[in-house]
Amino acid sequence: MNNIFEKLFKVNSLTQEVGFDLGTSKISVYLKNKGIVLNEPSVVAVNNKTDQIVAIGREASAMVGKTPQHITATKPLVNGVISDFEVAEKMINYLLQKIREGGKGGKFWFIKRAIVGVPSNCTEVEKKAVEDVFHNAGVKEVFLIEKSLAIAIGSGLLLKEPKGHLIVDIGGGITEVAVISLGGVVVSQNIRIAGDKLNDDIIRYIKDNFKLAIGDQTAEKIKTTIGSAVPHSSSDTNYLIIQGRDLTKGLPKEIKITDKEVREALSESLDTIVQTIKNTIETAPPELIPDIMNHGILLTGGSSLLKGFDKLIESSTGLEVNVADDPINTVVRGEGIILENFDGMKAYLLSTITNN
Image 1 (tube, one colour):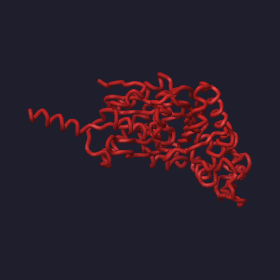
Image 2 (tube, one colour):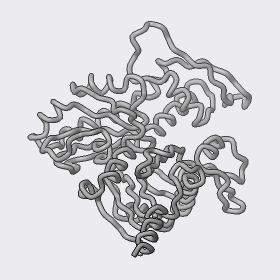
Image 3 (cartoon, helix red, strand yellow):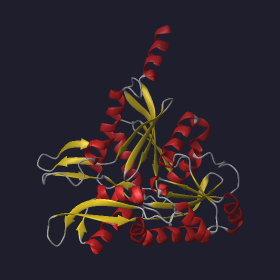
Image 4 (cartoon, helix red, strand yellow):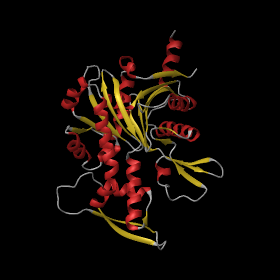
């Protein structure tokens, strides 16, 4: 009998349970009893000649726009879903191996259970792709959860009550707006306008107005350094000196871009996000509107950190906007809460597929 218990204990000590937030720009991983152990850019560099993976995560992200012709730095996740199955599978395998080798998850052989967040309007084909990627990585049980619900759980909202909450998640690839009540999504809309599109807006604006070509990393720096949704209170003008390629002469060129010009570049996309919020409110059941007015809007996702974006939404909707604590990790934090309290919270999950 003692031998049986010893074997059971040994097997259990060599398994783990994980939560994955698969974002267009970033992947976060939660390990049960350990917390958030990994945040990596969801970028993979591939050698086109050999079809081999050259780098993944931060190392691959640093290569974007700087690779020779035979190497491509790509994102296997687009708009919150898998766009390149083979590359995504290799990336998941790599990240799990990195956790093991880094010692952050302790010693374990395989993943017993994974919870993975997906957009609310994810198709059955897209869900199946996520499940298959994790099964192929050796995960036994794969559970899916709508990201809006994971955000609500990660933010401490009381989901069991018949009260409406409005969640706006602005990530890298998509913005998702959802009204939730009684532990489910009542109405939702998402658009393919988020952090990556804002970078594209900056690139296009500088090309059209300064005849200068810049890359995504420079656009990201502009957005995070002087980007804003509304004018700041100070009368001083913020600006940034950037370098790129002169499109008329083909030579290096340096320009100064101001925060006002960046707001002009971003205004159309930001207005579209605000309109999507309004449209979602319009489709919500009338009985939930008082709740939304009382609770306001929960703003989350990496792009929610754009300066003044919460103020723009407040002025446009008349609702109070609360930016979530640690808005980049609300999805994976919610998945972690479910992992730690699985039996009592598994009802929030969409499905379970067991890999026999």
